[in-house]
Image (cartoon, rainbow, N blue to C red):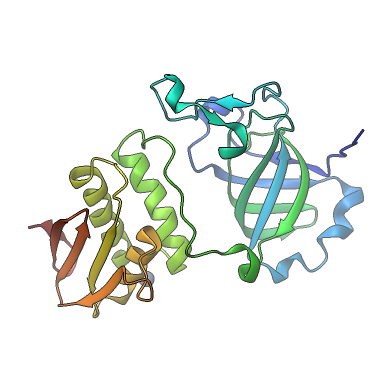
Length: 249
Ligand SMILES: [Zn+2]
């Protein structure tokens, strides 16, 4: 027998799980007063893992069709330990968030995908040295619902890598979203090699964050000014760049 004791609650403007944006919404964790001493020196860390108890989730399912997949045929079934679905024997939700501020027992976070009132069972700092695996990969589960959903997810990856939102990053996100949507039709390319201009370092960062291309693995190269090239599955797609616009050529 295991007994879990909630340490606090999520405070979110979102009250209904069906209304939750894919990447969550700005929210806070309010600790119960007795746990407040546990926040000592939390300000040393920029990001926090939040573990919450998804009390509305189903607990007797071991395979599910993940959210975002409309085709309910058996080949789309996934084991619950291979997805992040809240349905699982112990419905512990896990989300990584940036700490915006700490006011007493209230921790403001840039985003959480837990609804208002969700019990929080633990908090742990994100450790760059242990938690960041730049070469990790996933075969994507399902397809983005639309171009805007794809763009939002790509923008988050670009900002996570580059550390700021800037005009060059936004241009890179728009360009790569166009490539994923219009050229690849949201399919995952079996191989991808990116060539980007050396004189656009912010855009280069954005592309590295979204594609995880790297010089050492041979999937990233520096090329001529004004051109981004994607070599993928034996094809080549080129974009011409100006100061603040891109064009597929
Ligand atoms: Zn920048």
